Image (cartoon, rainbow over all chains, first blue to last red; front, side):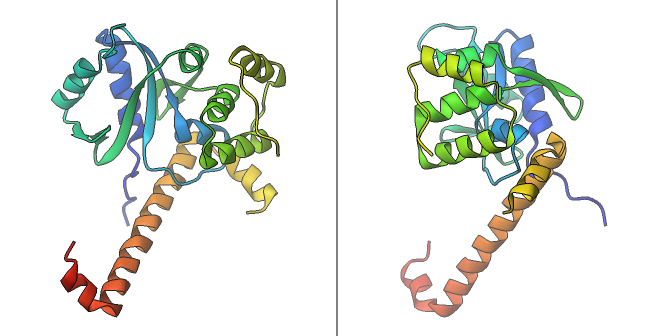
Length: 168
Length: 52
């Protein structure tokens, strides 16, 4: 029986993000959110991908109309706050402050031959601490249990952004 | 899930983990669809009253 294609077209998502950099529509990007956490933890269910980008356009719109227009010309569809590639939702989120630093310091990876970057575990934890939803707290627990964390780096990030980890 | 099993899964290559997430999504959709079907069979009138 032929293998069913992956429901998550992550290589296509990363390729598209690289094209946005080449086209000058964004300066840099990294994979964030649940898929970034999964890079370091056991797999768990998630229904979208978060691409966090440093905008080339520093106006309020962060160049999002041009990004959407470029991706639509490549066959992506828009559905509410998501862009869909092969029915898989992707959010393009403009970075600022902590998330911009997370993009700049992200770990270079290669996914199915596509070069990309993924948030470091210390930044994922700090961002989760700043958001603080139930699923973010679970993410912190997963990462502290299963990822190699640079404690000094994490403490430095938490201190600079005035964040605290939840008490276990 | 046992901690050793979680640790083992955490060490899989990223591509393999993404394939597993895809399987989880497919399973979750299947279960959801099955629940909707079962609900429609158990309560056929609710489907008439609320066709959505």
